[in-house]
Image 1 (cartoon, rainbow, N blue to C red):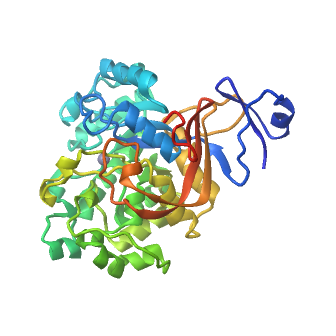
Image 2 (image 1 turned 30 degrees about the vertical axis):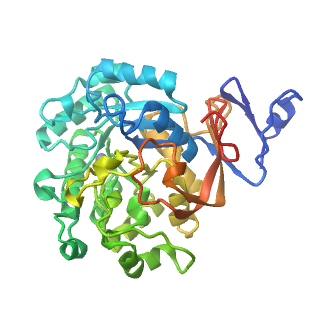
Image 3 (image 1 turned 90 degrees about the horizontal axis):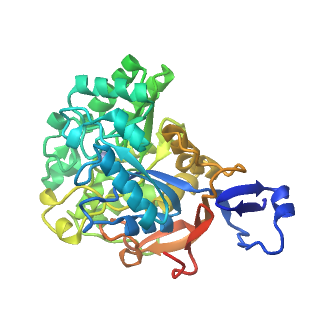
Amino acid sequence: MADLLLREGKVAAIGESATVQSGRDVERLDVSGLVVCPGLIDLHVHLREPGQTGKETMATGTAAAARGGFTSLVCMPNTSPAVDNPSTVALIREKAEREGVVNVFVAGAITKNIAGEELAPIGSLKNAGVVAITDDGHCVQNNELMRRALEYAKMFDVPVMDHCQDYNLVSDGVMHEGYWSAFLGLKGWPATGEEMIVARNILLAELTGAHVHCQHLSTAGSVTLLRDAKKRGVPVSGEACPHHFTLTDSALAGSEIFWKADGKAIAGNGGGARPAWPSYDTNLKMNPPLRTAGDREAILAGLADGTLEIIGSDHAPHAEYEKEVEFDYAPFGITGLETQLALSLMQLVHSGLMSLPDLVNKFTAAPARLLRLAKGTLKPGADADVTVLDPNRQWHFTQEDSASKSRNTPFHNWPLKGRAIYTIVRGELVWREENRQARV
Ligand SMILES: [Zn+2]
């Protein structure tokens, strides 16, 4: 328990010296009974600017981040145009400065137009301010090109993040390949389609000495590969998304079957009103797809033992009309900024798998370290980015209550436990749970 003093956008003091230094004229926020931690960072967000503002905008995306307790986010480069040149980086950074309510960091593309054929100008992207490069949404298939990308990235000291998907193995798969894809008659996206590229990235990281961060890992095999590679000292890291460790592929068969098949192990015997959804719900279609109960457990174990250091939402807004089509034709992706803190607390902390500080680390110090951001800390002198959360707050998330421009979430009406109460960015209050009129 300690006081925290913020002054002129910076952490001025913490502990007794904060109490001593804060004069009578200092504005006070009563946070008794709540947890005060460094502002949360989401390193995997699709803000859709520029070019796809029907799905999300700088204003709505960053407002959703603030509501979710996130003070910083990294936006992915698969926009129109793609973030493969310095002027698009500058455009996003300017727009974020004007219209964003949280800190926005930009990820650049690995290849021109994210086409996987020719390298983007990695040095100029770095000079323009990108914090990482990735072709997210796509995956560089040419291993020689990826090797060169890693060599350049190492030279320019910019981290490489990769969406791991082997196009030939995955082909036009729309859900995890297994029992439920056979049951539902949907084309399968095999676990090997991810693991093949994770293995490729490990080999190339070993060869080049460049760090590779594997995004949104979803399979047990990926966790095993990463765990073994790290034991050998290979510079790789991994990320998990809350939907992959909260749901399984049986959810595609409808809520009734899900609760009967895998849901009990996930939600426990809590009882009460459980959310319902139909079979073939396109709000359960994402890339990589929901996997088996065994994969889900392996992801949780990987998070608990540190193999997967970071949690990100892969917030991927899509318009309603795009999702309201046959399963095969719907775009991949779901929103996640506002639900990921609660889902992570429920699956990892309330379940007893890890401590609250360990979870906070995955949202703060760990992504800050990977991206070399001077964030994720409350040390005096640091930016005054602070998240105040109540890990036990019970609430229902509803689509209507979301700040995002899009509604594509499978977690509509879910009973959740844990919520951000205040979100503070550079000393400014941008979200207050009790008073939704406050700025956001
Ligand atoms: Zn992706």
